[in-house]
Image: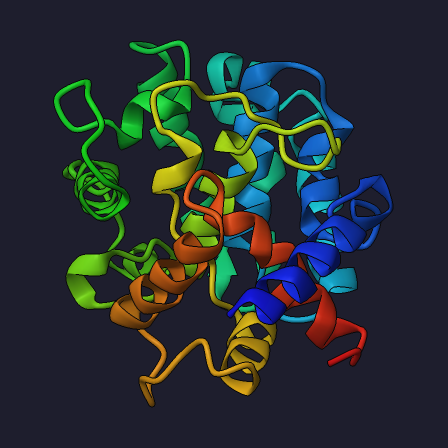
Length: 253
């Protein structure tokens, strides 16, 4: 474990730097300076993180253009005519119906709260990420006009999903360091409580290194991996997301 920790520490430091940003979906919220703009575009970038990174980033740029490159202003001030600018947007199975509901959710939320972090806080407080994600998904769709088709785009531990996209979004918003990649915008969710996002790259590397024993990849697997990572760094376990992801992408294992 000591040698593995040393190896992953080195790789986390190697990949957790500003050079990482350009080819990753996190580059999308980095285009903006406002907190709400970063939250909105960060959320979209995470939800759309499906497929090749180049395509994901391209579709996010298209979406930003449709939002006038002022996502928060669009969300809060759009008219019915403005919504027509969103028609025809599509990435994989995410389409304009889903997009318009997301925009509507953001508008309703920001009319009451200053930050999207509040949407992940049960009764205004934080207990653990599992409860936060279940709470978020429930409230996200707690509206009479929520499209049934949109449910597949917002995962929840209640369905035993690994919740890769949402865990990645939380990492972006919560982690704080001096590397310039993650934003560290939120204060109430502590970095030590985060759950490691498991995509195909992280899953592959973690299994090759013996960090995962479960055959399937689900919420319990995400907890299993994070438990091992906390043994290496109790304060910031998901920093190893950079190492596990980077090793697989660059075939360096």
